[in-house]
Image (tube, rainbow, N blue to C red):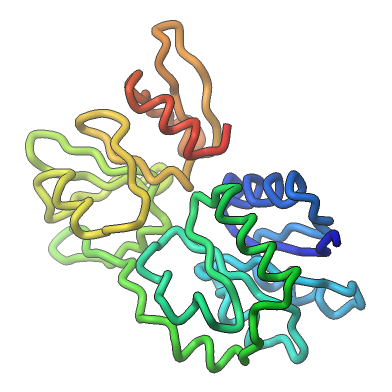
Length: 243
């Protein structure tokens, strides 16, 4: 039986990847959204939906908040880049839980659950109570003080002369870290990826990728901002991006 699904994720690469995997698995993807508000407006119609795939952390309206607004929600599958959220309870709860980058093999198990009605329903408030508090903000230097920056805004970390700088769009901030190893230890399970000795990439921030004459790959992370990935990292990066 073909499942009728819709999905919402504010990261275009992740949204396109999941939509493609769902279609390849035989699902009918009715709609894709980059924010929760547009999804809620669309849900006011009668779409006879079997399941919703929701990114937990979307700006202005999270996946949890979207679910809480739905009076009679279909089966919900949460998707996130943070493996720390994949707690044991969700394996037997009202929803399934996918960690980015989603693989075809893991998605197949989710679809089998949905088709077999193996996932009992719970309310949005019950699910919210089950979530651990996220740890996705960190301090950066700003003048004489500090700002708290969300990891989701970050494209990459760069170490220069034992100082780690973080890039968010075209902005650059100095952190308190002195090595990329410290950054990796601060955000375990978030999928950060070394593409050079001095560069740590958040793959979900990648907007595009192209081949270079050297055989390496260049990734676009913001308008006019490209990073070069080493040959050893290029293959893993393409796999991570589903290319």
